Image (cartoon, rainbow, N blue to C red; front, side, top):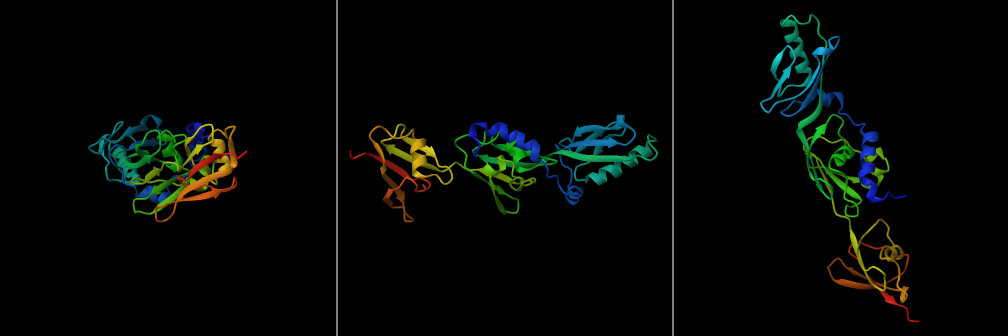
Length: 266
């Protein structure tokens, strides 16, 4: 059963909570270099008062209780842990400090979200960032306008198609992890046109495997004079020329098809 798109914003936030299970691997976390704007959480075992959560300044500095200001931009979390341990020992604050440093918001690493989302823009990478997390931050997809697939483009130029309907149903295979510099694009949904003997002629969203019969229903159904047996589909061929076809109720539509519903002969 397809999820009503008017509920997608709510569903997206809920799915984000369930599917944000894609933390960076340990090797990737060790290789990451802290940058300006990152939010860093510091914990000192046995000394909770020395723990803090602070954002790295634009000049690359981090202020830590007792230690003061440290230049951390360009360092890995392991290097910051070692630096803090030395400062605690040199300052005679602790003898054998056990320090843990975790980046919780990668503000210096951003993901661009473009297309038919509520709030397009750039969003900082989270510690467990994935497609659904970023889409949730962007307010979700726009109901009735967004397509069924999103495109995830990596920094190296590689792309991955994301099945949004499967993602919103909880398919973890669609919830790919994201990294700084990635882009997520949600295109406009494909459309079709229906006019003639229907209650509500106009332009409508083309759903997957949409038949002529379902398209007529989307247009409010037939008028008293309309006939489902007298339907013409106007469709452009590969050369861009418009062709006309007599359609059956079970025929599947394509993007930008135009349906003409004629009146019954009797």
